[in-house]
Image (cartoon, rainbow, N blue to C red; front, side, top):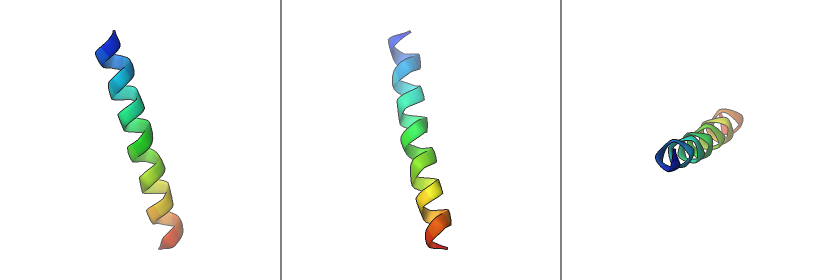
Length: 25
């Protein structure tokens, strides 16, 4: 389950980055 939570955290960071890029565009 530790890997799942880690992957979830990584996907969350990626989602935040995508949101930032979308705002810039």
